[in-house]
Image (tube, rainbow, N blue to C red; front, side, top):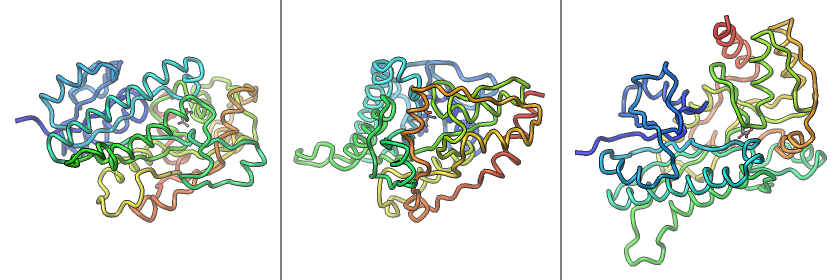
Amino acid sequence: MRKKTILITGAAGEVGQALVRKLHARNSHHLLTMDVRPLPPDLDGMSTHIVGDILDKSLFERLVSEFDFTHIFHLAALLSTRGELSPQAAHNVNVNGSLNMLQMAADQSEWKRERVVFIFPSSVAVYGMQSLENKAANPRPQEWEWNYPITMYGANKLYIETLGVYYSEHYKQLAEDEPTMLDFRCVRFPGLISAFTVPSGGTSDYGPEMIHAAAQGKPYASFVRPDTIIPFMAMPDAVKSLLLLAEAPAERLSRRVYNVTSFSITAQEMAERVQSHFPQAKITYRPHEKRQRIVDSWPVDMNDDAARRDWGWQPEYDADRTFDEYLVPNIRQRYA
Ligand code: AKB
């Protein structure tokens, strides 16, 4: 019999590592992890790990013969800054790779006559505020408002959201017998901050970079202006939202794509918090015109009322708790 399994792609990334730890601690499912990189040694033994590429369809053909995927957390992606440096590579991974995953989950759902739950992290990058005035006038957009991304990454995420809904509700709509469809569920994340990993290739990275630099006694020049504001969230809340949404009863869900967020903060407020914990921190500002424009196109906040109402979403870490109880103690220990 095939093993009931949770598949996590992009498992060596920031969210992936945190999710693997959490799911392993629950000990309820067999975990199959995938990434183009090996997992860090401290995750050894927590999953069956495959070093492989989501673009490799033949790999999935082999995997489905061995594993029965009940849930797929498809986290693999190239982030927004990286995507602007290599737009075609980003499109390949973020769109073609995601399409492979969706098709595999659709085939599995149809074949098993059981909906595979497909969890997809999207991003604040799907928004595109057209000016700073527009950003200030529309601080908390709903899911369907201002969906005019200016990055390859944002455009890719928005498209996969749409395809996920298609595969869940309209796939093979002209066939005589409607297949059992996959169950696509998506959270749109703000900038994420982890105490244990440092992001790479994102444009919200100035937040986490600032604090990780300060804890190591390194100076940091922020690539955005001090007044730059976007929403952020601590990594434990990001993982919490993925699991809450994965476990929510289908009848409670009024949409397939949900905003989730925690606190909005300017780069300067972030720097002040960092400096209050690390008084020697040297934080300066050297805005990078193009990365600045990307962050300026993201809203101040996101309306996450639907997630709160439908599946009880509530962040546990506001800005105070994120810094005082999560980031600072763990980061101090990490670099001690
Ligand atoms: C990025 O900066 O690209 C990501 C994101 C906001 O999704 N952190």
